[in-house]
Length: 166
Image 1 (cartoon, rainbow, N blue to C red):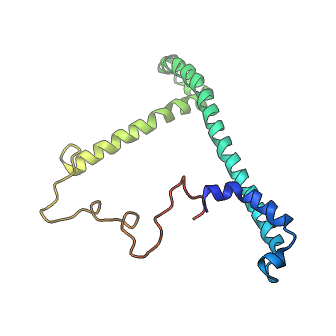
Image 2 (cartoon, helix red, strand yellow):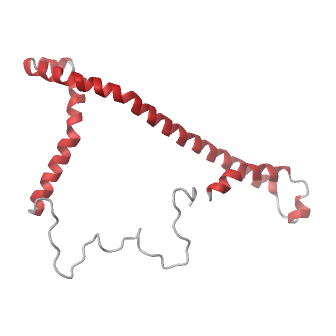
Image 3 (cartoon, one colour):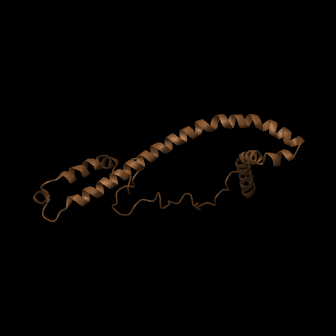
């Protein structure tokens, strides 16, 4: 469904709900009231989803604003904590959550470093991928299902901005 269709769905639901001469306009076997009710409900859910997306963006921006000064303060505290810890290991037990917080901050960088090192050791070429034999194709050069052309006459895949419902 197109975003533009979703935007006008509430108006369509209202229009269908107000219709007076349905049998004369569309024939005796068409009932617009159930369609109008379902369309109105779907439109309301789309509206709620849009509000949730907006709230998520707002919450994310406020999260960033809230964390920045806290992380700066903790960065200032870290040298004092590490110095105290080097003099008295009981500090780690007394402030176990703070010690954990500082240890966790180191792990992503350490893990990335270990991964880079392991890749260098595996290839033996200091991070460069090994050369492929002549005529060999790598798995990355073969078209994947996501990029392979369609054999049918289906429409091109929907983009996130153009379509909401596939």
